[in-house]
Length: 408
Length: 194
Image 1 (cartoon, rainbow over the protein chains, first blue to last red):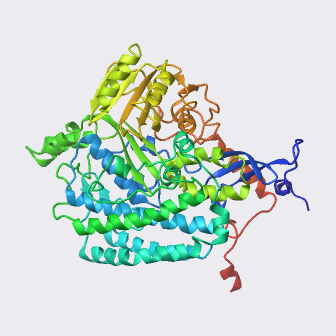
Image 2 (spheres, chains in turn blue, yellow; image 1 turned 120 degrees about the vertical axis):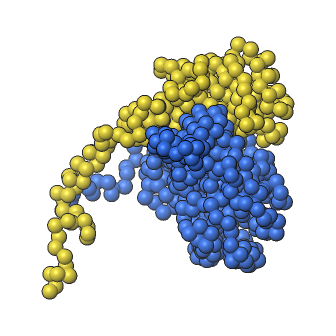
């Protein structure tokens, strides 16, 4: 029996001008790493036109943040780039601290640098696993997950969560690190460089891997800047731009590390950059462990985690005579400065920027998130045009996009 | 170069356009008129000792409930950074109250394409000469602009596309497509066995 539903399963016919046909890839496709849809216009297997469509995961964070206090807004950032949630948390906290002028104790800065780099390792491991899987190197997949599991266990020890941490807080971090955590982290970074070598022996000089990556998706430095690419995608094209060096935050100005650069700007160069970045992350974590200073982990200037709304706070202040509520009320309502800042941090995907406007209230007047994934997907149509459809998979993988961050 | 010095040079180059210069937390911002925004950004990008070659972010703001006096209803904010010279500046273009519009900067940075689409999508600011100004995050038949201050946080009605989707499910149901676990009326097989 022929049913109307069958018509969607038939191969699209050519529309008059040669062999050209259109193909809708995604949003349910294993190689698009989430709910990315790409509308393709094909001539044989060559891409003539490539139109990415996003928004399937849009949750309106920018609107939502305007109704939340600064402390509450932190949990939204977990859901941006859920592979490296810790890096987003740190980025949010750094931005709010700059906006409201809150100092951070040195120990908290070091801890945040450690967890930020651990989160970079997590993200790069997942990227390597899935990117390799997408273009046919299946072996490396579970090797990467083996090491990622250790990192997630460490995060669990630190804050009880494995995915959505909300561990840093404005003005510091939530809890201090334990001795067990430091010991296990030390053991991990002792073995990890040999594990990276293991991945490299599997794919680095593999002929199939080289065929699929070398010379594919070439972007020159000029083009990368024009498209607004950041992170490893920009550094793979030879532009030296790393916010950890350019505008250091947390403890990045206290540690030594190099910024790996590529020159070819192809998929292979971006792969090499990320592999080298993992080595550098290990260096940073080692130095942070060695230098970790004693002291408090949260600033006394940090806003209270529970902020009463105006009506509630007024009642509380009325009841107490010079009580703590009154002091809290003054701190929450009046100490907040008004102004605007744009603060960027280097997350695994690129430059994550928060543009905040404060009008003195305990909620942000406007929060804009400059998410690297959104801009990278926007650049996809220019990068993929004229290449083969099979290379589109390699390109999406090497841009390293996360749709939660792109759609917000 | 010091950000304040950049702002002053911008003022001397475009005296008619610059409305206000201020510094907050070490970051300098320039409030400007919208008409010559492309010329200003091009000048910032191509002058030898400025070279603002990286457009960090572009976003819109609804000033309806902002306390600062003298601002127009909407503005577009450009954050620029110079990778070779390591300095930054922010431009805030006041784009008017009714039917806000400003020239597109896609000719300077192709990366601005999606950022401008997003600003149009969420705030309804038109970008003149934009090559492909469509909604990007919301469905194309969405009504209203969510980041405007009068837009409610929680809607009252269902999105039209949702009712269409439910109708489609009903339509497909008549072909007998009932995968396991989706049929609510199905009796429990473990009980049937007894």
